[in-house]
Amino acid sequence: MVTAKVWVLKKHFEGFPKPSDFDLKKIELPNLKDGELLLESVFLSVDPYMRPYSRRDMKEGDIMIGTQVARIVESKNPAFTVGAFVVARSGWRTHFISDGKDLQLLPSNWPESLPKSLALGTVGMPGLTAYFGLLEVCKMKPGETVLVNAAAGAVGSVVGQLAKIGGCKVVGCAGSGEKVAYLKKIGFDEAFNYKTVTSLDEALRKASPDGYDCFFDNVGGEFASIAINHMKKYGRIAVCGAISQYNDSVPQQGPYVQVPMIFKELQMEGFIVTRWSNRREEGLNALLKWVVEGKVKYHEQVTEGFENMPMAFIGMLKGENLGKAIVKV
Ligand SMILES: NC(=O)C1=CN([C@@H]2O[C@H](COP(=O)(O)OP(=O)(O)OC[C@H]3O[C@@H](n4cnc5c(N)ncnc54)[C@H](OP(=O)(O)O)[C@@H]3O)[C@@H](O)[C@H]2O)C=CC1
Ligand SMILES: CCCCCCC/C=C/C=O
Picture 1 (cartoon, rainbow, N blue to C red):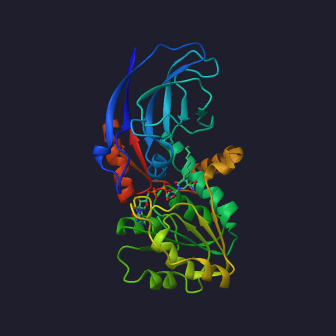
Picture 2 (picture 1 turned 135 degrees about the vertical axis):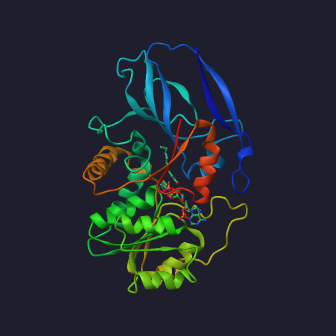
Picture 3 (picture 1 turned 120 degrees about the vertical axis):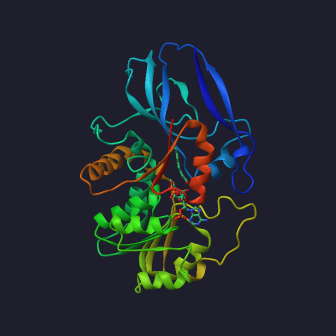
């Protein structure tokens, strides 16, 4: 008999999540039936989507939603061998039983030298978000200028590097001096700390006086309202996330987008990465190849200990992560 530790949503978040909104529980797992596997989480992901999705999809008492890289410890399913690693969507749990249907094996050519946690970040859902958002929503072209915010995070850091590979000029904004230095190190042409600039409007103009062809928006709110005025004619805005709004108890008010959209003839499109689930393999292969070749660099903010999942999640929402926020069990 295996005892799993799980984190439960004790109370729906009101405003910014607090440690007291979570409860750590223990669950006894039953013995395996034919076709089932027992898995142990090795790395778990904490992501911004958990904040809005918890309100939309969960009720109090549910196990927190989320993905993990897990190792198969016992198998009564011939398609899965003990010791193999998979990406699963089993929520915040140390151990779980699966029938194998919702598991993704790590690519067979995954190099030994590469952390398996990257399957939750640069070579996982956030990397795919950058890949499809840039290619299919921004439709970036060589020679264009791309703006990305939350640029030193899991999605943003890949957006900037893929835009450089695609022959674009890249401007990134992030919330600390350390993050700005990192963006310059990984090849961003311009980077600034949006928290310390005297005027975001001036900083965006200075970084690209001619404006922006593509804006990959991870933040929404006030930042996006200012940035839209810096778009070039026929510019494209990929509305990827709105993290500046996820913790609002009272919705923020405009300014509104219609006037700049009309006069600059902009395209603005929201998207969810799962739209391209049928091209997941294409995206992961491309990302893995670039990482192996050293063309895409990665950084992970690793929190040790399953007990620290709520703090890692809260820390990520506060901006404490450089690169992908990961918990190592
Ligand atoms: N549409 C889709 O399919 C997907 C969307 N997303 C979205 O992409 C965005 C980035 O996600 P991800 O890369 O995983 O997360 P990150 O790794 O970028 O972590 C979140 C970052 O957001 C920044 N941030 C937090 N609060 C604010 C704020 N009020 N204003 C500006 N920046 C803030 C912080 O960086 P800083 O220090 O720079 O402020 C923080 O580090 C999120 O909005 C997320 O919801 C992610 C995956 C899929
Ligand atoms: C693997 C779980 C599916 C995650 C989909 C994430 C979409 C994110 C939206 C905003 O953050």
